[in-house]
Image 1 (cartoon, rainbow, N blue to C red):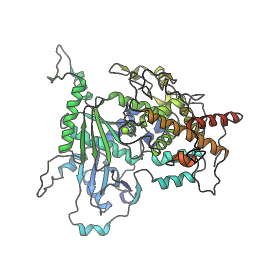
Image 2: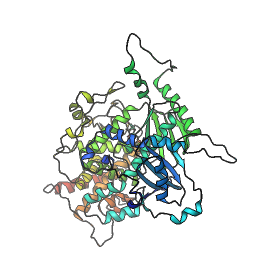
Image 3: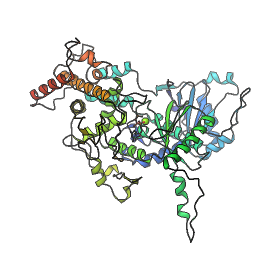
Length: 556
Ligand code: CTP
Ligand code: MG
């Protein structure tokens, strides 16, 4: 069970003289389409990483004077930004203006004496703040506004969706409620930075980079935190220093393969996190997986973390998704709705298994948007054609080149509404020939399936791999049936939308109900229940009757 994290926002007045209000950079993560969202992926990464390095995490007493707290910390240097959140206790994330403030703070910090237990001394950036005289300070407790860090409850979500103006409005509302907040993003980068400090005990100069949905702009509040231990920078440091007649190399230990090296490195890092990592609990070493990893919970942040190494391609695919997410505002909106729809119907799960994954769903949405006329998203091959010399990127023999400057990609002329796209997405995949065809975002068209796995989605960079290899025939079947039923509901509503007095969930909300099959399919009687095939045929007949007005998109 994850702790429920509540974010406590700081009232502006308290810290005004101590804080310099920084324009929140990297709004790419929060989805606003201002100028900063056009930043390149690595620029955002660099900025966020640097920000995290100046940041500390402090477990605070529940009753604390915010003003005194900030004043106390500012003895170590000016503070740029801070916020509080609750997760089995009160925590503060404090970003200093200068990195030097951290060592000043660490120098003034002691290792606790534990009574019966013994402490393992480790100078991290995760602190515990205690009150010297608790009774003095409680009366000055500041009043803080709180906002939730986890996604909204189903009740709140259904309420918001019910009162939305249109399906388009519903889809955008869901995006706003579920996307990572600025604070949650900061906490993710900080957590990586704290893990990096621990890994640096073995590998000084290593970098722990977040990847996956934490950075690709498709992350939902509460999603896991994927991290990649990057050791490549260590080797690179010395390369430019080799001059003259000699070349100096480190003496190293050799192992039979890259995979064995990865396993050995992750094994010691796993031990290190388990034994010395403050806040790291439930450490599991999953070293025999195709992509070996260490899984653990970072208790103070509440994040479930997956740490891998030698996973540069996954970082590149995060960058690709970041680009697709930024190219058109409909992309993320649609992906969030499809992800929530899949979760609501248990098509996805937090437990690994034969389920479809969020990553696969995102690829399906991208593919679908490449298939629109005119296309809403360009194919990966087109992004590769647009690349310049600096964009060239080959990883382990795989060509991962694509244009990285968003500003040079022409926006789509397609103006279809989200309502139409949602409906068409369900129809498209309700009728997709999964038994014959593979989904391929590189070419933006179906390919013959190279093997017999039920669902085949080509990995965009390691093209011989299927990212949905794990999906079973029955899970795929469930997906297809739910897609058809959802298309049916949206079509039916178009003709017969529930009246505003009926109190019935409508549009997107109707699709998110736990068992649309039972409550919404044309007949409730099991005997009479329409088969998925019949729904498909009915849909086709409705469509052919409506060809005169194909883009009919009623509001509520
Ligand atoms: N990945 C991959 N091939 C897979 C699974 C994952 O390349 N078969 C890469 C993708 O870059 C993906 C990242 O690993 O984004 C993290 O995987 P995962 O956590 O499963 O997906 P997320 O995109 O992070 O989505 P979620 O919010 O469900 O965690
Ligand atoms: Mg993930």
